[in-house]
Image 1 (tube, helix red, strand yellow):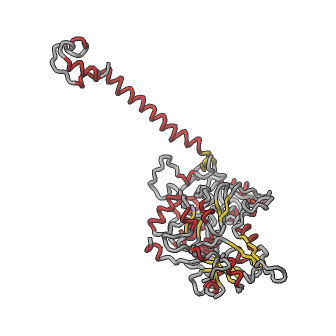
Image 2 (image 1 turned 180 degrees about the horizontal axis):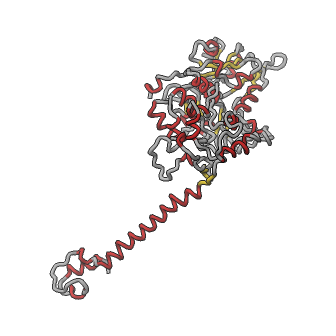
Image 3 (image 1 turned 180 degrees about the vertical axis):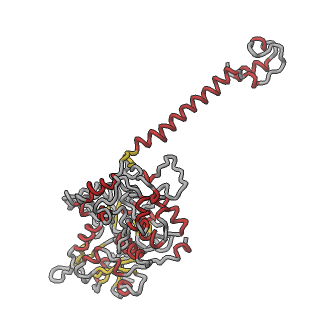
Amino acid sequence: MSATEEKEQAVSGQAEQGKEGGEQAAGRAEIKPTSTLSRAKLLKFLVLPLLVFGAGFVVNLFIGWVIFPRLLYSEKDQPIDFSHKIHVEAVEEGCESCHFFGEDGTFSGVPGAEKCAECHEERIGIHPEEAKLVEEYILPGKEIPWHIYARQPNCVYFSHAAHIKMAKLECVTCHGPVGESIHVKRYQQNRITGYSRDIWGWRISGIKTNSWDRMKMDDCADCHKKSGARNDCFVCHK
Amino acid sequence: MKDIHSEQKTYKFGMVIDLDKCTGCGACMVACMAENNVSFRADETDKLRSITWMRVYKMTNGLPFPDTEVCYIPRPCMHCEGSGHHRPAPCIAVCPATATDRDHETGIVSQIYTRCFGCRYCMAACPYHARYFNWWDPKWPKGMEKYLNPDVSPRMRGVVEKCSFCYHRFQRAKNKAYAEGRREIREDEYQTACAQACPAGAITFGDLNNPQHAVYKLKNSPNAFRILEKLGTNPKVYYLSTKEWVRRGVDHYLEEEAQD
């Protein structure tokens, strides 16, 4: 029996009231419509559906935010567990000691093994990761197959010279406090697009709190707009 | 927007092609294809399907021997300036995806392949046939991927492409200028592949607004003209020819029509 029918019955007359039984006292003249919601019905129509919805919500959220990203991104270890912190303390010119500019304005990005060999031609420490570097890569003359976190798609042109030399931006603004890290984080690659997780951002919710959280086109365009730089297509595309 | 851009120097890059010097050798076409990763097939006979950002056309005066004269007309994208904001280049006006746009700094008409969805309106709108459609994914002969230019993004099946005035060379030149603390680039720092490849020196490239650049003087020559000038597309590619029949033919004037 639905709630409206009950209401109609309650209003229709006192004679029928006795039939309802249960919690409805037979002698009452006026019955408020809400009082017809018994505890059992409350459980049945409100609490239970809410529980079912809530459980489904949590399960789906779990699938979407935890399981889906794991399916979408493959995870790889960097070949060497590099400590930026140790190196920043040891070198003189900060980031640019290893991530240097060429004379023609080109940027080294992640430098080749040749740059490492300037200091690590032979072992200079006792760390097992350094032993790996020297024995597996430098002595045999092999390049280190780093996974590049910030690699952009093919259609993107980016000039480090324009941002660092001309606009005087800090490395941290886009790359975050990498220089303070002791271990390299695991590299995640989107299985569909092949792009690094750092481009889309690590937060699956897409919320951005730091300027270095994401490296999508909108993030570049936002900053260009705020700083008064041009936003023509050919500024960043090639 | 205007005050934002006012701080930065704007160029108006353009080209002057001397048809009296052009021998029709096709070096510009080859240089362009190699520079810009333009794909090709084993059989390139069907010109409706082949891609040539720079294309050399042949024109004759139609007279019998011994009066026959031949003129070769290299045709890159004209990078039409249009007239004002409300009348841009024909391709820009029709593009529903904003995949093609006029670059404010250089005046170059850009084409963003990842934005294009291949409706080919622009190809229909372009009066110069300067735009090409990728009917297939590019397939390079074995080992050739290693020779591709890393500065130019390769295109995929289903998008339109065209000459970009070797825009990546401008990016490279500016990159170098920034590293040296300059904002402006010199004339010799930015030249297109076709201009550098032309053995006859027929192609001159530079800033049409800069009196110091060679193109500035050449475009003001009495022999200078542009293709289909009467359409009002305002192209940034000028041609030079001393021959009356070439000028009339290229501008598509009819016999009885007077040239202004």
